[in-house]
Image (cartoon, rainbow, N blue to C red):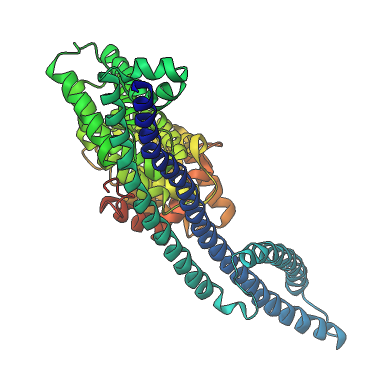
Length: 465
């Protein structure tokens, strides 16, 4: 009779835990779908802007071609009428011919870009007939993507409610174990089912033992009890399990966080992991590194998460790449008084122009270092441009002001001279990064993104049910 009772009990646990397994699988599917939709939104916006820039470049080239041809035709007409052209006019004809050749080459390149981008835009359902409304179509399609994203997030929120059954299944399985049912069930069913059902609880225990070892505190101490209660609470109130939360505590402990600091930082780590689609361990590593680099306290992990999330949802980068960028540039930026939000905005601008991860980080680090302590070539270039990095007291001026000054000062020079200045200031390897940031400051895009990040932007996907 006892064997039958145990089978009935385990059957009940099975019925209880099966919805949780389905919920976990659906959460993964919805999470992947959300990431794909977010990627589609960013790709569409980037491609639409690139298409418009290419089309504007073609229009500009067309206007230049018409003007050059008109001047060249006028000179040819003079020759046909027997007029002897002066040396200046002959030189102008050569210049016009060269200009026409370059304009035609440029036009051909931009048209090829338009064709390639047009193919990408068509995949988003945007028609290029009458391409004057490409941006408007892209905006409408982005709104559709955003509506889809909101539906997916709502569906994800509904599915997470099923995870409550998971906690209840753990409690039921724990009661069976306490009542001796585990031993009898193992004898009756080879121990397989019981072990499978109780695995989450066993995993949680192992993770908490790891936390205890890493923090070097007694398992009966108030500090350890507080960490355990936090992990259980987050496991019942968020999309993560208690074992996941304990794993996050372990990684923060490995980074040298005290028990109190772990408690303060962990909610922000979970938020950041969910928004960025990155494993908890890697997220904890990224977050703890940035806290250290910018001299922030553990209770500011939410600020780190919100800033990075706002940055990678607005620019062509992701959490992992931003963390890599900050690894290289964070210590230098913080030393110069540049805030996390300012550094993240600069990293986002570089990412929009193809510089991500360590490439962006090394470019920013070199540019900042050479601006703060310029070698002779950089000092000479800054002096000629009339730009100063520090004020009269030797304190660094706001980075936006420095970059904007560089933009204004270089505008009176030709493109070749501008590149030469940027190379002298930032060095051969980093000048493209500096040039990109200067252009972003000149257009106002850098300042706009910085303000959005300083205002904390949009909150990441809520953890609370």
